Image 1 (tube, protein in one colour):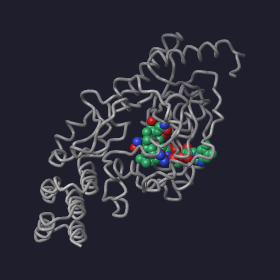
Image 2 (image 1 turned 90 degrees about the vertical axis):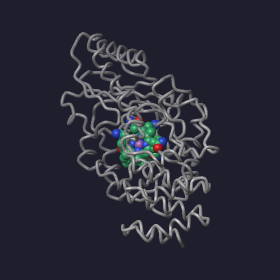
Image 3 (image 1 turned 180 degrees about the vertical axis):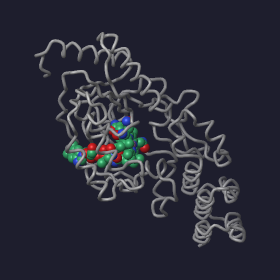
Image 4 (image 1 turned 135 degrees about the vertical axis):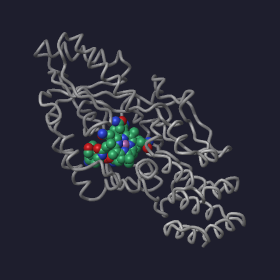
Length: 381
Ligand code: B12
């Protein structure tokens, strides 16, 4: 139980929590602004082992800063941690129209913008309610903080073996954010829950990316491969990706804690008119860079960049093995990006058939890029 020794602290804590809930945050907890020494050491060690490779922006200096809240806000006393459910009710249908899977977190609007703006409004409103200028820094996966470590300390949820933060009523289907502040608030206690003996997320991960409890090998994670990776997807992993074209939810779908998760109350996180329950893959293969930017401007999908998404689309079509994709993939053999041409070649090789093989043979006559030539030769074999 929080101590009620200081009535001002207790009052400010109560006001902050009630106001955060009023603004639509599903969960709110308070953490101290003490350094995260243990999480810093673990994260740096993971980096040293190469498990975070492929994310050039996730560097050591960033981790150090994110584990020392007072380096970010020297007057920091507390961190107000929040979580918002994004669990959508809508169940997309994928197969009949060659639709590709989009992870649930990316079916509505971009959470960074939605939650950051709301947290900024929260800080302004809180200053009015407490009748003092609250000093604050606000982050929703928009800065160096380790969002999950903060959420754990604030009692929002506990670390699952998949490394996702699990919460009681919303499972792991939550976005995390925080306000580092100079307010003295009453900290909550971390929850005592664990995953027990369950290893379903590890057993069912399509690529075996959860290499030990609480350890992800980035380079194998489909979320990394489809969103963050900018280069070719390793051949050995492509067949394991199935029809997932942006992110992956398998470790969350199989998690027993998620069975009872409540649906999101936030309209911005539902696909609605402008979001995406599934992506129609064939028309996507013809999209230009400008159309990509326009279509996905408010969506997390923008992060993959046009050519990354088209690369993923080729892999998904190759895995689906549906010959309706052949004419579209043949056209993609002439795409201006070698990355797309190479993956289109792979997909044609997987689908096979006379028409696919003929177009691969012909493209070898004109293709000049070495990497793509290699892909074509492999596909012909
Ligand atoms: C980098 C990153 C990724 C990378 C790398 C993932 C990774 N392992 O870090 C990639 C692109 C793969 C990724 C994927 C996803 N991500 Co991401 N990602 C991040 C980011 C930017 C940093 C995460 C980080 O600090 N990694 C460092 C590693 C070392 O930390 P970690 O894996 O969490 O490991 C911790 C635990 O292992 C714990 N630990 C270690 N040993 C032990 C032992 C015990 C007993 C316990 C209890 C704990 C424990 O300590 C470690 C350090 O804190 C955060 C946003 C942020 N700024 O924090 C979002 C974030 C983690 N991602 C998020 C989401 C939604 C996803 C996806 C679900 C998206 C999707 N559907 O495709 C997947 C989930 C994949 C997975 N199982 O992790 C959410 C997670 C929300 C939640 N409920 O946890 C975050 C918090 C963004 C947000 N603000 O909402 N992500």
